[in-house]
Length: 60
Image 1 (cartoon, one colour):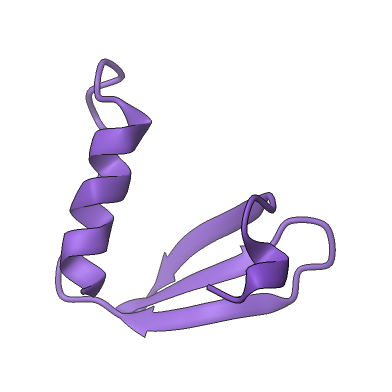
Image 2 (tube, helix red, strand yellow):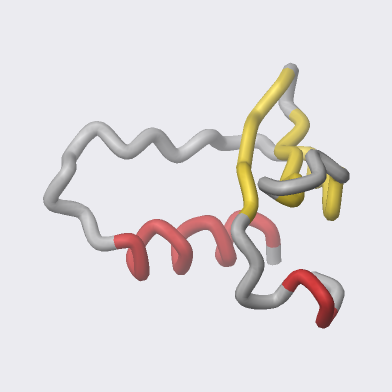
């Protein structure tokens, strides 16, 4: 993630196997990654930190 976007507000969307991370304000795409697995948060008790760790493991 570029330094300018660290601590920025972003949106994360999956579309046809591509994970797109975009700047919330401008809509500019910051990063794109091909994914094999999609993590869906169906359990509201899951912590954001755990989801971020799971995502980090998938993206390497």
